[in-house]
Image (cartoon, rainbow, N blue to C red; front, side, top):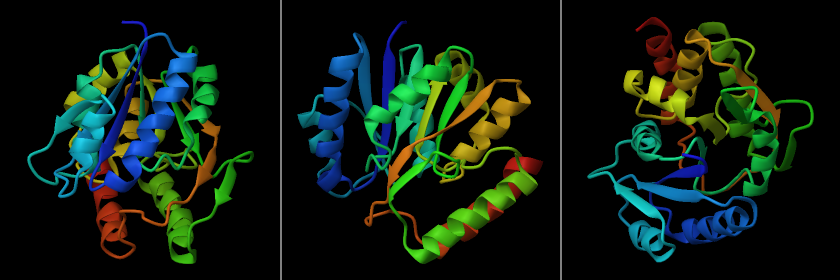
Length: 227
């Protein structure tokens, strides 16, 4: 079906989600005739669900905190339109960067935003530890799993629905390395991937633990590659 679906995983995002949904809706109203916005609530303990309902988003609720990857699988599977964007709830990559991705989607199957390419515009930088991990992790991704991708973790990716329908049933990652598994499987299946530099603003309220999550992410690279 012609149109675009926007999928947003959200966990305890009551403070940011309303502004994010308003910006996305305003942009889509101006630029797309047919669209849907899907929020996947990942067992939030705050009023995330109420915020999603107040902004007329399609709501999917996990019965407990399952993880970003699990939530994205639910949201992507439910999306109806030919193009599907998934974005972080903090909208660190502004929604108007979507036009850059759409520019390439006709000749590619997946177009991903990147913070690590020439031309990327990092307007608010991460703290030193996060920034350092953000440079180390791509090295190991390229070494262990998939090469020639500079930034697998930017939460701003545009996919064709046939790609989603093909890959999601085979995906197992529940956590933050969902993106790595997605791109690894896409490349194995012969889908064309395009990486595009985008604007990005660090959000100080990131849900990623600088100690626990990187360890889990590094370990999961081996599972993705050798499972």
